[in-house]
Amino acid sequence: MERMNWMKNGLIVRRSLVYPLYLCSALFAHAQDFVWTPSLQRTYADLNSGKTNLPLTETPANGLSILVADYADMVTLLASDNRAAFVRLQPREATRLTQLSQLDKTSPYSRFAQAEVRLHWAFMKLKFGNELSACWDIIGAYKLLAANQTQFPAFLPNAKSLGALHVLIGSVPEKYSWVPRLLGLRGDVAGGLREIDQAAQDPIVGLEARLINLLIRAYITRFSATDETALQRLVADNPDNLLVTFFAATTHMKNGQSERALTLLLHRPGLSPTPGTAYLNLPIIENLLGDIYLQKGQYPDALAHYSRFLANQQGVNFLKDSYYKQFLCYYLAGNATQGKPLIEQVLRVGQQVVESDKAAQRWAETYVQKGQSPNQPVLLRARLACDGGYTDQALTLLQSYTESSFSLPIERAEWAYRMGRIEQRRNQPDRAIPYLERALLLSTPNQLGFGATASLQLGYLFRQKGQRQQARFYFDKALHYKNHEYKNSVDNKAQAALNELGIPN
Image 1: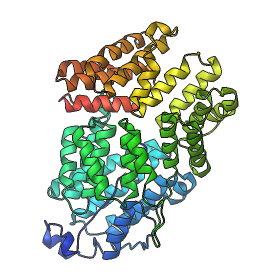
Image 2 (image 1 turned 30 degrees about the vertical axis):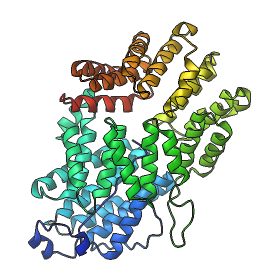
Image 3 (image 1 turned 90 degrees about the vertical axis):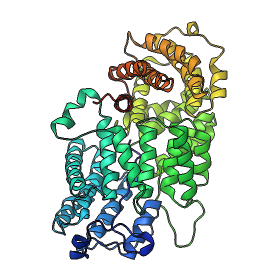
């Protein structure tokens, strides 16, 4: 979840944006403590669109001014990946929490704003590797939101953030589930999604809630045809919103629809400058474009986009990934010798926080220690094409091979897995299942990562067929694979699926 930004909200003052006044007397008693001024509304809307021409003056006497200023810091830091700026700005968390704690405690925005500030900094701390402090912020935010929900059950902004936490906690793998229980945190994937759906009706937080809902379904649960329709509508409703475009593109790529993602990214807001309007600089978009052209086998274009990403990236994430994929451009074009210095860069730069960097590091280490067999290029091309949804191309690459064409156990397992995923993406579940079961069988003796990913996909396929016990068996099996580079995401998805099946963690 490392590319995810969650947006914030508040109290409405214009008739066109009237928010139900559930606690009129309390709100009027301290009307100036949490006020959406016209300027704050514009700034908040611009931040949610990824715009940067923001006249923002932080006013400690107005809790919503503090909240919007904090949100602006989060958006800027997550976009830039700048660790030095994070270290410089981090003391603002304590200052703002102190300021908010001194404002009207009878307002539903009191606890909510404090929780949101904690969540902002939790996301940033996770991004910059401060996991322990981030966990304490998440715990603190959860307790504030839960208490607020009890006191103000009709306050929709609370449902957005509490619902998201219920989903995230509900997808914690079973072996770690004792931690949230010990701390009094409750997870519930289906319930959390219902809460987010409720918040989507709010005139201010509705956009954020819709986006959170879709991202959860894309990255944690399962993306359906209904979700695809909702995503397309979200993009159509927000043509000038860079963040919606960005998240829609990453969601399309996650679901094997890279051609749709490419169209969005090549026509994203901000490419044709409008006087008085500027957008965030998101270097990661160049990395995404590189991925799409690599999937298509257009290696010079991919190299150019990865180079632009590396030239503009201020942080340490996705460096290993980009150098590794630059090497693949040479390797798959038959010029491995020319690309060899890039493998050395993979081993030297960046860090291993995001899964793509972990995968790049592991691949580079294996390549340096053992080299690659002659069959690796065809498996790599097929994987990349399938990942992008170019299944005809992937099938053409692999259909002339059989399992016996490969001598190494890991390559046999990968061939079976790739064939299964191709058929799955082609909506041929009965053809996909035997291949994925074979990949699982071949992966079991050595606990290969293909076993975990094959188990997860088998769980989805049997759930799609209505065979809940079989689905449960495979989701549970996915959780028991150790030490593979995609363990975090596979475990989260498998546990979320079990939770949705009514099997709590």
